[in-house]
Length: 494
Image (cartoon, rainbow, N blue to C red; front, top):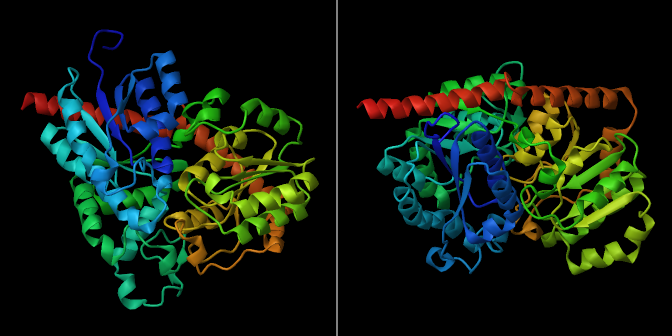
């Protein structure tokens, strides 16, 4: 019940089991709870363990968020035991079973929801989980689709498929203009840079299910804002023919450092040690380097990155995830690099408190894989980026940052690197000289760099305003809740 005795609206959030999909939906759970809703956040044992700090904090705060651990029997899905998150997939042979196998959560989720005295009034589920559409129909509640990428990416892919670009452009590396975008933003890409999710013959059946479930959804929820993608959002809503609510950047919902330090997973480094190191650095002087939870690089590429950072003569924080910290890379790091850069370098081997780091005034730039969460986290705190896309939506996210918002510098990568087998990639080696040049371009005191930093800070202020009471994203969340409550009232009257 709320403060005056009315039942709280009960939202069910069902994320895909991947860090980039779970993190913004945890933020969404907080936002809905702060606005008076009860939230059931669906997860599995392995993933619940990873966000234990967040779960404990919710319990202490008494926010009306329930983290529901459902059993995920990996063997039933044809997966190795414990493979409950996309970053635990170690072979391409398990990729399809992982996505298709999520449907085994349907039965325990239905059982849980039918046992609740407080019936749900809405389900918000990841677009990768088409089985949730049937469950929502059985429960007679509206289902909203959550899309994690930028709106530019979603609109571009829709338009490319609508115009059947692949029928007339057979060369995967031939540049073309994305059709039907607003005239002021001509975006040129290649086919390998603009593929839709699951756009290949072996995924055809699964993609069809996704498209059907999305067509049946009551609306779309997006982690973006009108201030960042206004014209693309307007166009996307028209082509979808349904409500599109942008309620982000979701990462701005909580500005407490203790929350930022544990957001997404438990960090391997003490937050106070990181903050003390950053406090010792000048404002806007540090470059932060991280490539997300999925993108993996060859040993030779990791060494080139390190050599480029060393040659830049600038302070840096470099995050090397476990899958990249091979014996060869670790040997190279300890063989002289860490000693030579110890006065200005901070290497984190494992999960890092990214949002906390980016929010610090000493951070002046971010070398990123262009995952949408990372892009939003950076622009939300006014930090410009060096873009190094790897796959999926990341090349179009780069276009948004570099060509539209003009807060980024491209390192020049044009061919995807697939995270499960980077050794098979056709991507060329990015040299230490290219890394050094990109860092200098982003961080130097030339007029172009100063203007880029100023634009980033302006967008950071606009992002914060969007999330504050009266801002565009705040209003959109209000409209979303009102829409769902109106849907519930109509059902009661019937």
